[in-house]
Length: 174
Image (cartoon, helix red, strand yellow):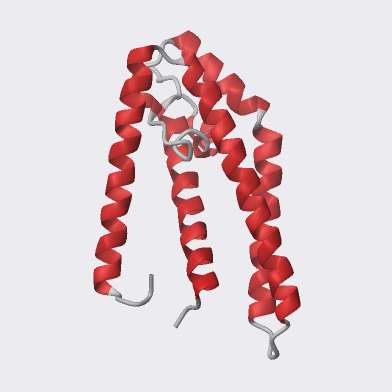
């Protein structure tokens, strides 16, 4: 059975994964179309897709103008290095926690330090995502912002429902 700290870590890691996946999807959707309606050079542009879905923005559904797409890409590019640095720091912290947890003997102090490092990184990531999201929302029209907020609320509700189904299938785990 997971203790309270482990449960929080699992929930936090799951939330980060869901956000990361969502941003990727939105960026891919924001890419220009090729001559046959497919994404032009999508295999090269897909890595940028991790950005907007993590922010809760499904860009394709917002019907951005070419100028807005350019502005959104610029915002994401401006934060790319910081985003990658935080992601790498979080990966290293998770790896360190797994190594400590997997040791034959418990080193509680080292585990607490590693967990605090991961938590600090997760906070930095949340702040950066909020900053980027705010910058992207500033590019949108009031109607697009309203639609983005509606879609975000719907996504959060779907996530809540998934968690409820998971809890029902595995009582006591989450």
